[in-house]
Amino acid sequence: MKIDPKKVPVMKNHCKTCPFKPNKKGQWQDVKLANDVIARTLLQAHQICHGTEGENRKPTHRCKGAFEHNLEIYKRMGLDDLVE
Image (cartoon, rainbow, N blue to C red; front, side, top):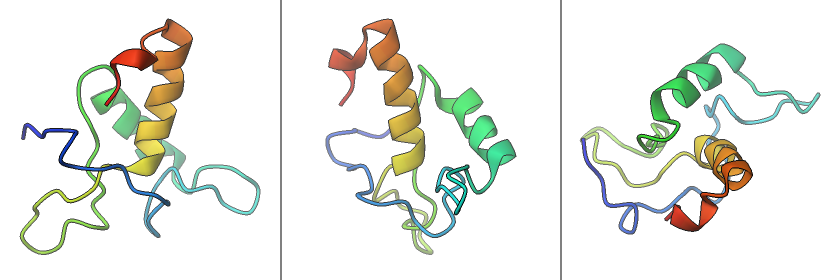
């Protein structure tokens, strides 16, 4: 599915099921799933927040955790000015 990032904002907070949401120790709730998302999306896609899609599966927000992680990688590569 192609999305226009300008029309699908990034979540302001992690949803309750976000694999990137830090637990009490500051670690991701689901490291394996977070790494799977990173492998699928880094430099090629946006992760839609499944906690906000609803029954019609229409994307309403992008995943805060995936966006912030990938943005950090883009910054280190000097590509953050290309991120919408």
